Length: 349
Image (cartoon, rainbow, N blue to C red; front, side, top):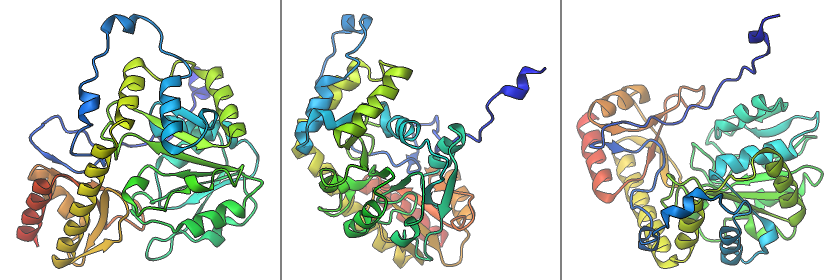
């Protein structure tokens, strides 16, 4: 018997490249270019407290998130980034022999978790213009998960269509991954449906709109029965998932609504003006409700643009995946960074 026969073999998720050189324009991982609020920056943690374990329930952060969204603390689950929260949700809720459903072009961690946890799954094709069709998610399944806005396409599904999927799957858990929802029009979030559907779990993150990707703060909101189930799995796996600084800084971030709104609005304005400029350069731009755009040029292959941009110190994201291999995902940076990108692309095209 060889131990190698029993190693769990999976195809891991591939994150965006993290260049060592700080003097680049990094637009490949959907980070917020403006940094967290001054209230976060001014928080000073007593380092002596780091010798003690953090609150396993992260009660302060849970209560702050609950108050912000107008729900009960028992409806909130927190984790180390939304990836941790999503992974815990997969482990908790997707345990039947029926396949879970998600789009064929979507967040590429979904099939990784499915393979890791031995969850059967089936993907559903997007339309030619990258839309999710609610009718594709009305067959028997073991659960449904999708981002809204979708990634990497940036397309937003109308809330009525999201509700159609939830309503059509009352015997399954539906996870709506809202990592980018703060950049979408008001009224787009499925959080308004949580009290109406006991099979809905909405997942959010502090990484994008709150400029805190380095702290890894994610959370889920659903009815208490769902959250209790996730807590039971968490405490069976790792009780101390949230560290003290993340709890402290997360609470501080929520207290600065003015800064949060101003940076989100700034990114949206830059996104829309950048998208218009890209169209003027011969790019097809998929309508975006996120902090990035998904584009292809009418004549120049995406891989060529990707490589020449990288040589110039500009990092985009290119997916070598059928159906989107001629597209680039470009994070929205500062106004100055996007102007530099436009100048570079103008000279290239």
